[in-house]
Amino acid sequence: TAGITQAPTSQILAAGRSMTLRCTQDMRHNAMYWYRQDLGLGLRLIHYSNTAGTTGKGEVPDGYSVSRANTDDFPLTLASAVPSQTSVYFCASSDGDSNQPQHFGDGTRLSIL
Amino acid sequence: GQNIDQPTEMTATEGAIVQINCTYQTSGFNGLFWYQQHAGEAPTFLSYNVLDGLEEKGRFSSFLSRSKGYSYLLLKELQMKDSASYLCAVRDSNYQLIWGAGTKLIIKP
Image (tube, rainbow over all chains, first blue to last red; front, side, top):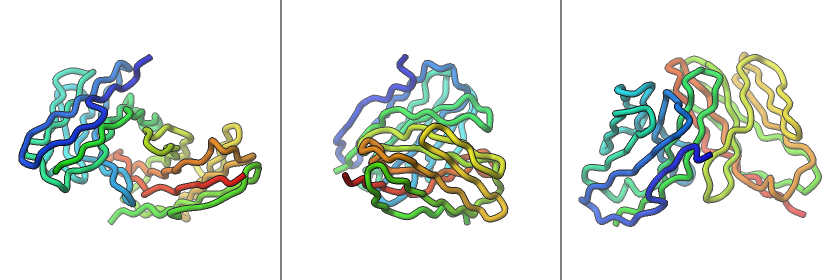
């Protein structure tokens, strides 16, 4: 079973360029999340979606946008990348019940130069 | 503000027992999760506590005291493959996870 698939695995991007990180899940989970993970810090929530057609802002949403057109896909877009967005990005999903864990994709390592 | 505190790094010996502590101050509490993350990989779910007490799952156990804002993860019979970071996360009143920075566990032979 695939679970959650993220693409690309890694990317080097010039500052000012745009980039979309892809995330697809095949578990029919209602909720999906985007986090960034930086050295010495906990995972920080960028955006989330509780169900298809809805999205919400997390702790660090500035510079990022998301869409949730269907249950399976939750892309994250950087409209104009800046070096501070260099990070490892994880997509996660859960079936929405409060006692259910989030399941993570393998991450995208993004470097902005 | 919301805060999750864990030790940055711990070292233990293969075959021994180690306890990783987590203290939290969050706006509301709707459960606490422990995850394992090997270097360069995704976090994977280990345990969930919502009521006070101990949850045992094989070599791993997790304890919660809501009144003290405290949890620990207990790892028994340590194996080299247990070398990883262990992440504590609390679900707050908005049902979002607040994450600690993680504890890097180093296992020595």
